[in-house]
Image 1: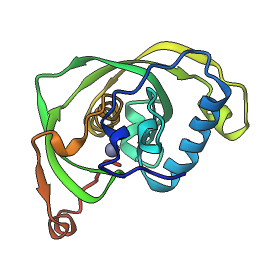
Image 2: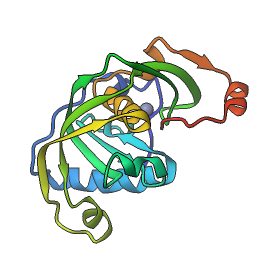
Image 3: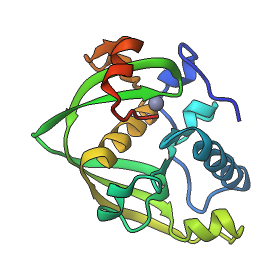
Image 4: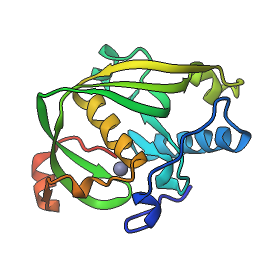
Length: 184
Ligand SMILES: [Zn+2]
């Protein structure tokens, strides 16, 4: 699965909402995105693979802290709406698969609330090829690293790119020295 890199114009388009139940090609897309994200990162949005639809994948099962926040740290987010941004902000370093080798230090709200449609049996859907069971307008409060990744992927669906968030671009040397996590 090919990841588009900037300045591909799809990365700055607002993605279209998706009807539930999903169509066959959308189901295949999610499965392919899942396979790709497992190898390359913690999040992947459909516009990054050339499909301008409101879908992103979160893959955080390898992060031990995350299990305190969500029972199932691998999930698909469809038609999301961030319904709350905290006034409290946090500064974190982000990277993006669509901007290879670029890392930016960016301030964003620390905590958010998200409403979205999802596939509630995601593990079985992915691993056992089960038919998707949909859950509409699920709610999630997120903080720390999860909040940051969701905001980054959410921006992809709005056609917003992280290099235009008013952050500070880091050099490769900065990254080597910092040894902090980065968002994909
Ligand atoms: Zn990104």
